[in-house]
Length: 217
Image (cartoon, rainbow, N blue to C red):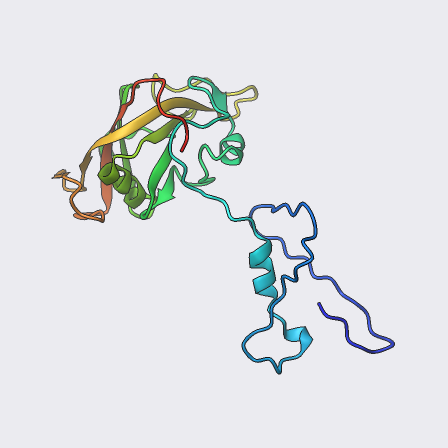
C-alpha cells in the first residue's frame, strides 16, 4: 500500500492467500496496482483486487489426452493428480466445464440403483448437473476423450489396492469415450442439444480407447 507522506507514518504490507499458490520468478518492474476510473481517489484506495488478479497465474484446467507424468495401470494420490493436471477437480468426480467439456473423471463408487456398472474396458457412470454432468455431456457431444481414474474406495472387483496405511489410491486406466447418455427417465439422448435435459441425473456409458493413444493436447 502507498505510504503516507508523514514523518511518523509506517508502511504496512497486506498478504492475501487464497486457493492455489502462485509463483512470481522475478520483479518485472511494472506496477500491478491500478487506480480506478476516478483519478481523484487517494493512494490508499488503489485497486488491491486488481493486483491480486494480475499476480495469479493463468492456467488451463481442462486438458485432453494422456497426462505426461502419469502411466496407465499405476496408482497415485489425489494430490498428485491435481498437481500434474491429470484431474484438477480436487473434490468432485468430474473435472471440466460446460464450454470445454470434461477431460477426466474419478470413479469412487458403483451404485446399481442409479444404473452404474463397471466392466473395466467399459463403464457406466451416473452424475447430476451439480456434480458436473453438463461437462461430461459436452465431451459426449464433441467426442472428446476422458481420462478415467478408479479409486481404491470403489466397491468393484476392478478397484486398485490402497496405499500403505489404507490411504486411498487412484489408478489411471486410460482414455475413454462417452458413447451413450441416458437421462433420469431412462431415455437415450443423441447429443444434438447443447445442454443436458430431461432430469436431474444422467448416466454415461464410456468405452476405453485403444492404447497407446494421442498425447495430451
